[in-house]
Length: 210
Image (cartoon, rainbow, N blue to C red):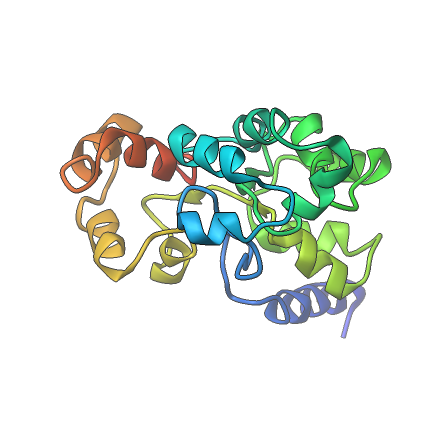
């Protein structure tokens, strides 16, 4: 077996070991503030009643920076890691700011640089591969909870679509029903038949047309 074939085979085997949770990290361990109940939000250490009310009133949050604007008005800086270890708005690996990446617990300047260095990301598997050069598999899996790569509306699998927070089987069907998509305006128009404008914009953060 020649060297190029060995490299190709190793790459395929590596990708097969990555969970098939598609383009959005498996964030079962984190509350999404756009979807969490008031009771769930109230259980987060560092969030008092006023903070919870402000989060509910401010939904939907399209970016982590939007959530942080609310959290920082109600919590001390030394509470951020504890709060964001429980609640988070997933960030787009290709357009998240350095400040947003730096809000992820345990991520400092060096790791922020590594997140940014490998742009553009075309799949979450790429994130696992590149960041896995610096930390072990458990840490990569933890970090993957905080991030996503947008899916292609015309080619995404059903599992890819279901990996979007808050999307169930019925909405997956609606995503697929209107293919092929030629513009994001089409997506907004068609999905807007089923959810309000705020929810359309939240969902639009996870998709693109390539």
